[in-house]
Amino acid sequence: MSARPSRRAVMLGALAAPALIRPARAQEVSATDVLGRKVTLPAPARRIVLGQGRQINALGLIHPDPVSILAGWGSDYRRQSPDTFARYRQRFPAIETLPFVGDGATAGGFSFEQALALAPDLMVLSRSLAGTRNGPGDLVERFEAAGIPVAVIDFFLDPLKDTLPSLTLLGSLTGREEQTQRLLAFYEGRMRGVAARIAGAPAPGVFIHAHAGGAECCMSPGRGTLDDFITAAGGRNIASGLLPGATGQISLEQLIVSDPQVYVATGGTHMAKQGGLVLGLGVDRATAEESFRRLLARPGIATLKAVSERRAYGLWHLFNDTPLHVVAIERLAKWLHPERFADIDPAATMAEAAAFSAIPLDGTLWIEA
Image 1 (tube, rainbow, N blue to C red):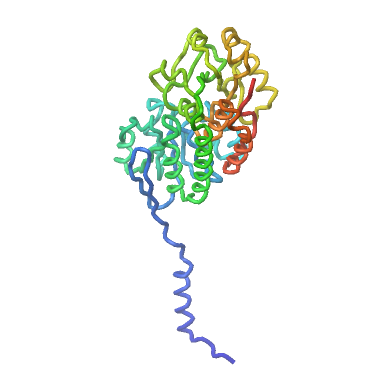
Image 2 (spheres, one colour):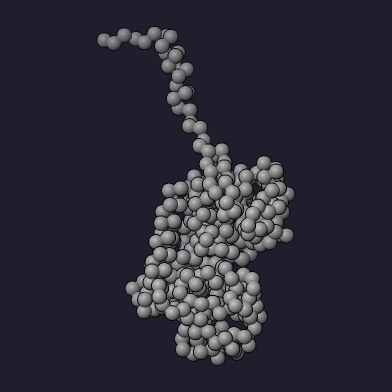
């Protein structure tokens, strides 16, 4: 029969127990943003403010409930991405109560005071909101002076350069490194695959008609943004020599004279009220096809050789500010070089990408003439 422990031993054991079950101290996290700035937090961020609401597109690929770690965001997302916002609202109803910090589309529409009042543990800005492409802008300095850490990420102005560091930073600062590394492996593998297949191929002239079917023709990418997607897919953007900035207006007459080998329209649910090209999450095939037929029948566009020879396509515009652009690039590459991508199925690639997403990604995201 064993001896009973002394009263002193029992008391010592009781005193020691809390030390054994005390939670481990939060681990410091750090990463480098797209401006080359090192960002360090005492623990993974749990009160993030997104200067542009659309940055949830990336956060939702590495976190199963991105809304749970947000303290506020820009209102641009609800306006520009109604189909995607609806999916988030259905799965995460708390998104309706997130405070706004201004529109977020431009620095003038962003409210420093509203963001500061939310006491974030991390402020996330895009390059455009940060104020410069080469160094910290005024907003960065103001937040840091107030003791708020700032991370600058971007998937729009220079997506092929900034996507990897932006995802790496978000993964590190939110403690989601494992899923982020899997996503990066998927992204880089698909991008390498496209690059290998288009090597040495002639680059057909491509015109991207952005937000197609609106009142005015024709908005198109100049340099960066969708222009990078065309180049990565093995094409040549005919508007890049006509537009000095990231986007601009090309007249219908210029489009007709340019006579592109390939015509690609972009659209979304935001174009429905304007009678434009409707693509996106939850959009059925019949709706997309009817909107595409109307677009291709418009005066001027109907005369393009690319349309008559069935080299006209439609692509979801919201591929343009998310790491999911890897799927759009593969889809473009198959349109531009069908013989080199005969065994590639972009729909299967989209399904693989959707496995990372916090929301369902089903719908009509591209269409062919």
